[in-house]
Image 1 (cartoon, rainbow, N blue to C red):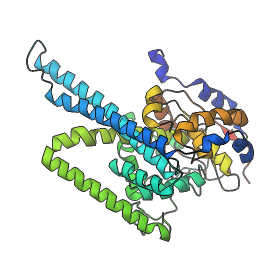
Image 2 (image 1 turned 180 degrees about the horizontal axis):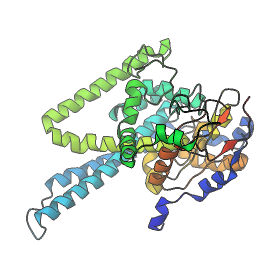
Image 3 (image 1 turned 180 degrees about the vertical axis):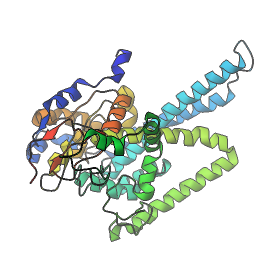
Image 4 (image 1 turned 90 degrees about the vertical axis):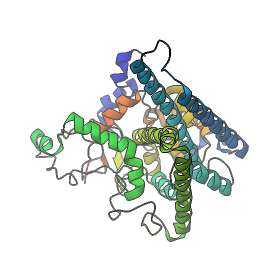
Length: 410
């Protein structure tokens, strides 16, 4: 790919944008299900364990390479000290980038366990999910509860659990029928530096803030709603013991990290755990945000929402190329199929995608736009949605939507 194309929209995005008017799909779930060969629904504990062990070996191998970095010296020889410092920094950034990708893959495997997609035995999925998610400081059972709720109401403005966009009323914007460009500029205009700062906070801290106090979650919950409180309205009463178990696991992991930092030093802990962990948060927020937040993807209110329409409000993206498939286990490249069949194991999802694409036709959403450009495009154009309308699209800081729905408001 020529360097300049990393700042261009993918042709698939351009085709959706040019449609201008969106007609909600009426695709039969039965037709989608019938297109998938039955053997693709089968889950193999042994095969899943193979992928988990392979991932653990790769993660350990990257860690061993990081350990070698500590012993590399540039103080002797022909390399000036300043150049040696730059080279060392570059090597650490390279290491953190790959180990962060591997940590994100550990989270993705835990995500599979949360859907009972690693094994036909729920207890096996629970044990594996708890281990995998606890390692990357995610409270497994708490996350599982709200994530399953997200799958049951994807892009439903009343019931979805994650990435609920603010409305015109939330931002105190005037009615769209009378608003002019200056009205939007007065409320929404901000400097590029401040936009970058907000993007940085969202990418590296957003997921943990969502867990701690439901940041960007559904606003129907009271302030300071937390995934760490067993009494939270996020959970049913029979889930509270599981939330306590998740908290104990997270507490144990934090204690282990504290002990590791005490015995090996805070620099060791930062270089080999927390720096990759922050990178993994960025990767994870990147692919989860871009799966559903896009100027060409609709949100629905209750009268127009169906499970199939919610599942189709998803974008498959080839993020990070081969590395995305290898480390992230198809979580971004075959996410639409995952929303139709969440318990299908990740290693079968590419075949499921191929099987259902003819049934979905033009409603299959794919976007080859490079990752960073797609992120900037969504972050700067997906600002708010209208308070009225059964099918709505994101509007930008000028109050403009790329696509309008064919469904008229009552």
